[in-house]
Image (cartoon, rainbow over all chains, first blue to last red; front, side):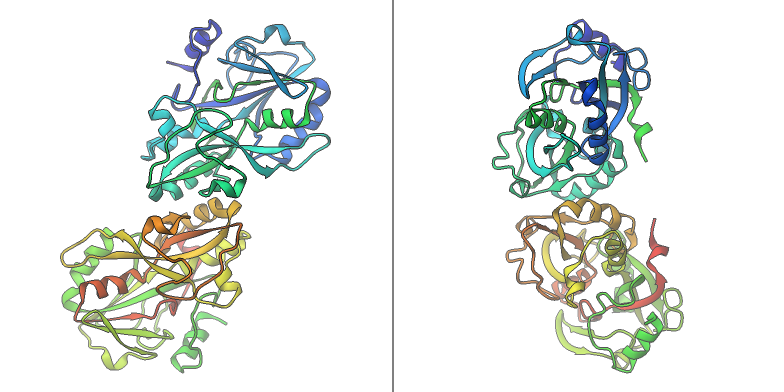
Length: 255
Length: 255
């Protein structure tokens, strides 16, 4: 299935799952929609925390992508959206057109699903993909650099990697800095404030086998966590793991 | 001090310490001297296990380096040698000229000390260097690929790396494949058969701080371990951490 076909099915509500493992070889992104008055501060905040929040495209005065997937309507071509008010999740929806106003700003932000195909091509198994699950995501205690009112902690995605492939996973993902790049932490969940690895804050639980190490990457769900910690009056994000699948090849983001 | 000056002092027995941290920016190597009858099998074995045993120069019918340090006498320009008989360490010496015969073959093998300068240049602290100690080395349970009679387990060097720099350490060292390259294991010593991290089999003990992860690289002392496990009638190696310091810049081995 091409990304365009998948997005068409998503818009018609025919595809409602996580996009993990979908359209292998294509860039996937996080989405954040903010009222205009927060845009400047958020953009500075993202810049200061670019490993967690790598902005790839900004849509102003239009919900249609121009760069990542020309003509795609970001308000309905993502399988699930989280609507947040005063920092609380008030609704999950598959279409947010009714919430949109022209003075809102939409951010498309790099997602680590993008480097999963390159990892698998190098012989690194990814359990959540093999099992058709969403990736495990956790709130960490890694503090972001605050800018204006924006502050909070990083959310991380976790993939169990067989022990002798961990360094390879670091090297391969490091070539994709615009989709979070190399891991932020390796092993020992408690060192980044994760108390129970079997209970992710977002996504699904996956088994970590005896010869595997949990490897943690920065995650774009960081934005949702920041919005919650700030109790921002209004914002919409994609639902964690339900990403915007772009028309760009992952290879275009290889450096 | 240039490598040449250091080697001169070593030959005069004026420098008798570990070469860890010496002549920053220069390639250091392991040394193995074998009777000719083992050469072919060893070379095939090294090739099959190149991450642990990356041969950089072979000296036949002469103890003088031609490539790595033109004219250096490998029999006395290393601070300490281990003489092994029937797999047992029978003597440690600073000069092995009396043991040498023209039909012996000498191997100079890449050493991870080489990428320590690049690691430090990128802001990664290395405790053993800061404290003027030898690196910690351990026998692991990682099995080498056997070739002919050669077989055994890998020896690994360990450096504690602050948690948010571990991925960087993987990426940087991966650029130096001829001196072991990226780590073979990260975290969890017990997963590679190390029971007590505070008791290295070779080198010195270093503190692992609360926010640090033990990172393990393949180590050229693997050869000594193999000779011991095989109970080879005769062989000489450098003493672990007491390396041959070459005239080559580490940057020449960057790929």
